[in-house]
Amino acid sequence: MWNIPNTLTTFRLLLIPVFAVLFYLPYSWAFFAAAFIFWLASVTDILDGYLARKLEQSTPFGAFLDPVADKVMVSVALVMLATYYQNYFVTAAAIIIISREIVISALREWMAELGKRDDVAVSSLGKFKTAAQMLAIIGLIWQYAPWMVNLSYALLAVATLLTVTSMVAYLYAAKAELTKS
Image (spheres, rainbow, N blue to C red):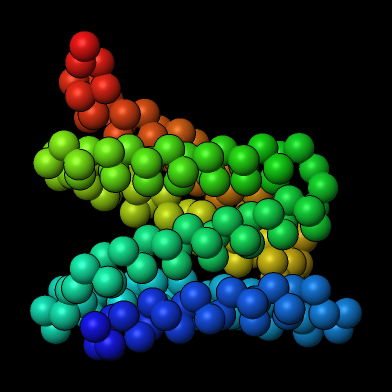
């Protein structure tokens, strides 16, 4: 159970309170530090999946914990950003992204019970969504310069559009099961 990929995933979970504390510290370097921690968590997300496949260390525990760590980290960051920016765009994006994660997690669990989990497996569209989302969140946390915030807003718009598109694609893939009498 305690292999390198699972240790990285657990480490990502432990970074969440560190990220939250840094985000709220009243120091000029706090946003950079919080952005760095979020970036580090994002890198461990990429790395744990790669290593699990490369080292053939995939485990049921890792398959459970990895998406939990991802969703908790992103949800915490989006809620904090919605609170910080207090505008309709960031708030709406946060609601859409978090809601999609809940819907797709429930859909995958339900499809797995039917033995059809592969019908709603992670797609390349979901990976692009995740990349745009992570970059947007890092930029909105760091706020290095106005151009970075503007670029992050654009990336958040792309991530939100991909979020809706991928959710529709997953629901369409499960349509036959969802519409059975």
